[in-house]
Image (cartoon, rainbow, N blue to C red):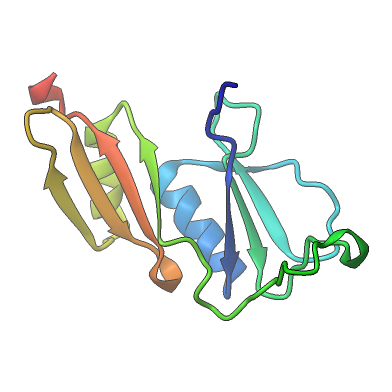
Length: 139
């Protein structure tokens, strides 16, 4: 079996704020999304045909009640937004420019014995994004 990253779903209190943050920081674009009966967006990278991030509002429900295992409970208590999501960027300098342009809070962690830098960015609703990248001077 081959497992690859498909997408991440984020349950947001303010869908518009989360969408704008991710578009501004990562350069993603709003794209096709099925006509679900709740507010949300699917965000795409320019060269990827599949949505990387699905954002939906707190009231969203995906589960048909007759198809749910009796032990499964859908919980939305504000704590089940994802803790952090990691992406890889091939352009460290562009990421740093965007962080400064949008005045975003971030922290950098150096990976031991490796040129990769982990950039942790505080997103709306306490979501943390990690972007791994290699500065040009370390390539």
